[in-house]
Image 1 (cartoon, helix red, strand yellow):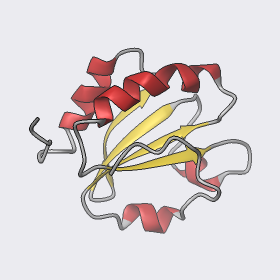
Image 2 (tube, rainbow, N blue to C red; image 1 turned 60 degrees about the vertical axis):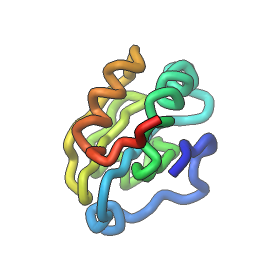
Image 3 (cartoon, rainbow, N blue to C red; image 1 turned 90 degrees about the vertical axis):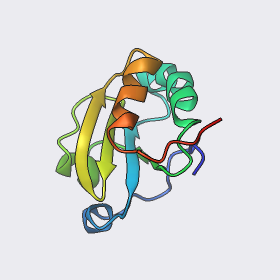
Length: 113
């Protein structure tokens, strides 16, 4: 799946996320967040090699239950899931390499160029 570039209009329920099969990344943030915008090129470069990973771009904030259920405090927070279970987490990633390392924990079927 390609990287989502816009935040979802509504967030999925935690039960839906917990029931996911395969690798997925939850990206919590906000469109006006400078840290979130700065991380976009890093995430785009890292996710390009992971076609099998589902990417959920979730606008977080006060009263948003999914972010609270994952104890998100800073944006962006990337939660890497394997079959609905958290395998890695990055808060305000600063390099493409650290994102790639987190992807390696969930995606053994990395696309070969």
